[in-house]
Length: 192
Image 1 (cartoon, rainbow, N blue to C red):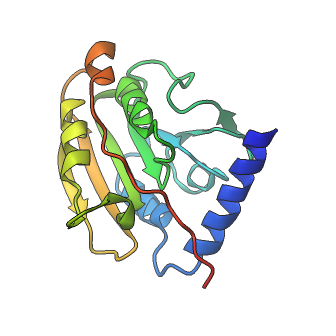
Image 2 (tube, one colour):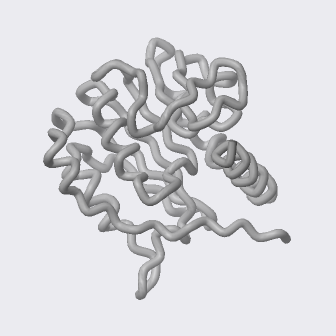
């Protein structure tokens, strides 16, 4: 019950904050998918209200910790019920929450087909280091996981988008467990 309350509080704060943003990350994901084949199968990690599935032409598996809309698969995003190599694209739209977010990306690598797409949008301030914004440690871990960066778009002042392609089989459990994912700063949603 506590988990559901915290989940609800997070999503309420999230929705209040991002509604004032000039561009929504999920709208960027929808635009990206609009240029992809209709036959693609997509896993929407941290789907929230499953708007992606309701909007795009592709088949979408909506995954989140709590099912808040019809069709959402309630699960730990580090252990989804999807089969290995079963999806063409994995989408994370502001969904890398928690200290174990790397496990979500390892799971995405597992369920993605060879040459599958990984699309990530995340709040830019989460990548802040002592000397400012630094995406390199995060991208190095994704590279070690078998992904190649195809596009990085930091033109939005609120969030950054990474588009990657799975180049090799997902790292084995031991290799994936050995990845040192950088700590992403917590999101603080401010009332404005």
